[in-house]
Amino acid sequence: MRTSYIFLAEGFEEIEAITIVDVLRRAGMPVKTVSITPLDNVRGAHGVEVTADVRFADTDFSDAEWLICPGGLPGSTNLADYAPLCELLKHHRRGVAAICAAPAVVLAPLGLLQGKEATGYPGFEEALVLGGASVRKGAAVVALDDVITAAGPATATPFALAIVASSLGTGIAREIASGMLLPLD
Image 1: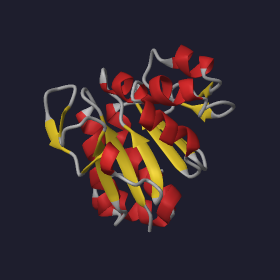
Image 2: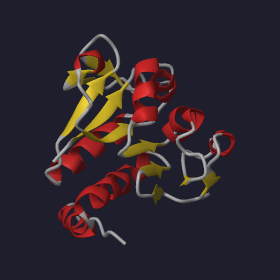
Image 3: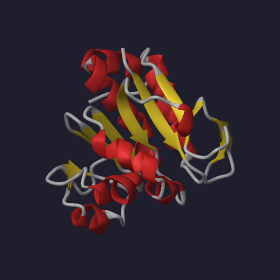
Image 4: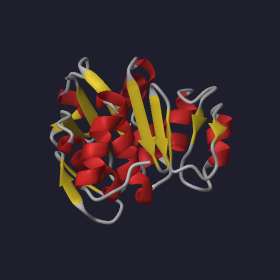
């Protein structure tokens, strides 16, 4: 099984990043947090500091299954400003996932949502449309074959479960959801 990577920039949304790591690991999916800074420790939007598994500059992403961008501000802006990540996202041929502000701030300007349905944090719809996306207003999660987007912190678990479902099937996602006492529709 290929590894999925969650990118951490200063100001990332902690609930989103940690929830995704937790759910993917419950499902047995290899996942690593990646600092896009030169440091291992990255501080989130609410002051929670996380020690990343790897640094971007030291990582080979050729085995990547999912490239995942948590939201938060200024975390999403910092991800969008990091040219090596943007190049990686543009050339990745498997799955890309983003939540909260990240679909609009990171994916849309790169053209990764062109002609696709997407969702994101309320108030970022215009940026999604400018990036060529068709906004599914009010949707918690929009899961396509190669792109998954979600609205924000409250949708972090369904977002992570959508990644699991895409990689391992809905049966595994339902098992993980059930173990977390969360119904999966």
